[in-house]
Image (cartoon, rainbow, N blue to C red):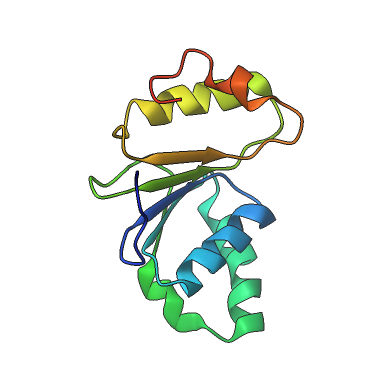
Length: 125
């Protein structure tokens, strides 16, 4: 079983308010957070409202934002947030699985797509 420690870096993939909120929670918990998003400037604007409301600008020392999908060797948790489209989710899972180890937890948001359906054909279901 994989245990995620406070010192473990986390990869967060996606964009939008949900991703910014998740990033802020992870930063507040003390994690090194690496965000992969397609629009860095827009993400920074969203994150700024959380930082201002919580008066916690020091957490930015533990934040990296990039458009390139990169996973460090010691990353134990990857959180992916995408639109509710089965094919987009499957493609992202496939890409992420090629970069993670069997001990990495891969979490993805879904509201209406069955997780068993998304896991079909996965290396690490």
